[in-house]
Image 1 (cartoon, rainbow, N blue to C red):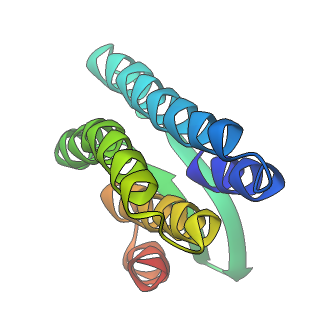
Image 2 (image 1 turned 180 degrees about the horizontal axis):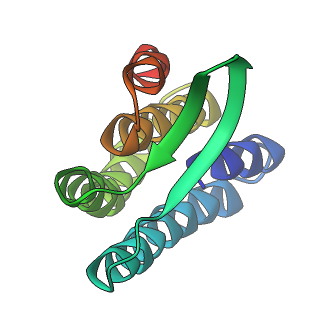
Length: 131
């Protein structure tokens, strides 16, 4: 979700209000998705997503587990608050390259979510490097 939001942020770079709305809506969508995955986890399911298998037997995969979901909920919930603060700060200071900042912010959150939900060490390494 954050990577898709990052694409939307770049697409709306000429319209600051829309870009910031995309940032906030992406944050809220990620938090709601994390809550949905937590509900599946509480129902006894183990949500899993295999993104790729670059080397036979070594998958780039995500899996929801209780401790990882706690981190994912914390990170996604704080992203909403941090986004509101960042928008106000960037507007008040009239910072340059705001689109780049919001894009990098979304990429960093993608990395944090990947670390939280990593199924194996390879996935953890890839997403940790994304941070």
